[in-house]
Each structure stands twice: as C-alpha cells, then as structure tokens.
Image (cartoon, rainbow, N blue to C red):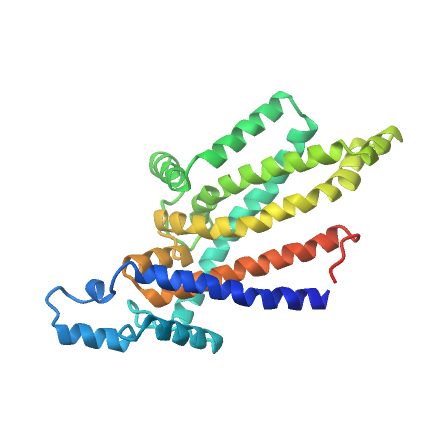
Length: 305
C-alpha cells in the first residue's frame, strides 16, 4: 500500500507540471497586466519599471522556471493587485471555499444517496419518476441562473435569507444549495444506477430467498457493494465544486478562492491565477488518491501493490 501511495505521489509531478504550463501560457495570452493596473497616461518608463518589478520583462521560460522553483520552496509569488504574498491570500480565502464545499457535499450525500436508493428500490413507481425529473432539473439548470433565482425569490421576495456575504449560518445556505443541487442530482442518479445493478445480483436474490429483512438486505448486501461507484462520483465532484465556486462565490459575494480567481483573471493577476490552478489541481489529485484508497476499505478484495 505504501509503495502504491508513493507511486501515485510521484505521478503527480508530471501532471502538475503539465497543468501549470497550460495555465502559465494561457493566462499570458490575455494581455499585459500593466495595461490594467497602470493609468492610460503612464509613461513608457513607468510601464517598463512595473513589468521589471514583477519579472514580466523576462522570457516566458525563465518566468516559468522562477515560478516552479518558488513553488517548490513554498513561495507562490507576490500578487500584482494586492502586493501581498499569494500563499497568504490563498490561505485567507481557503476556509470560505471549504465551508461552501462541505455544505454542498453534505447536501449531495445526505439527500442524494437516500433519494437514489429509494428511487432504485421503488423502480418505475411515481417516486422513481419524480426522482428522475429532479435529477434532470438539477443537472440542466446552470448554477449562475439558479443562484440568481434563489436570490430574487428566497432572499428578495420572501426575505427569508441574506442575499450574500459570509459570517453566519444563514448566509451559507443559498450558495451551498446553488452548488449542491447539481451534486445532489448527479449523486442521486448514480446511486440509483449502482443500487439497481447490485439488486440484480444473485447474492441479493439468495439473501431474499433466505427470508432476510429487506432493510438488512439493503444495508448488508446492497449498499456495501454499491458504494464504490458512488464514492467514485463523489470524489470526481471535487473538481465540480471548485469550478462551481467560481460562479457561485461571485454571485453571492462569497469571499472564497473562486471569487479571488475571477478578480485575478479580470485584473490579469498572473501569480494568483497560476498558484490557484496548481493548488486546486493538487487538491483534486489528492482526493482521487483518497478515493482509490477508500476502495480497499470498502472491498477487502481490492489490493494495491
């Protein structure tokens, strides 16, 4: 197991290098930060001094080498907009995004899995039909549209919850629901499919033929074997949470990583964009590793060598 973990961690290196190269090149195609950060009447000498201060006057391969070497040493650079270390800005906003991720994931797990299981058990019933319609709606509605509708109806018309911001439990509900609806729909759909596949297996028929209680059959034989594809889907949704946070945090003025990224892109704050892409990719890969390790815990027959 330890050898497998070490091998996966080594495989992270080329993945992160590839992702950072793509992000590094693409962000520089958006233009020169000096045109955004400096006034239009700035002299040529001022522009050159600005670019020299942030190393933008160097060849792109040298800029990339400096970024990688700094990242290895824990230095992610200085923000062009805030003039502060990027690592500090990231860590300052990370808790807000993690709160949003935990809330949306809780919605997906606590509601999506039970809904999917009930839909599979009650296959072709009205419950199954309603569940599939909810899943279709949850995956079809864009998160930015759902967020705006929730603000207009729940926050503005009904005055039940705040329109945005962070600090209270009430303020996290709408943005968490905005991201969580899509995750809930996807989780319910895959839970339904996974449970249906297991219900067709011979060992389930045997358990029922022995006269075991239906709840015991579901908990002992069905769910244990259906959890592997469900866990896979939940692990893959980490990327969806961070991508959804980019839009949702902007809509709800949520001070997290997603909003920081949007502001960095609009102001061409290269260090923040590069560092955020790299760290999010690292988090995604680590979560996938944890998902793979969870397989062995769910099914002892799975061995990693």
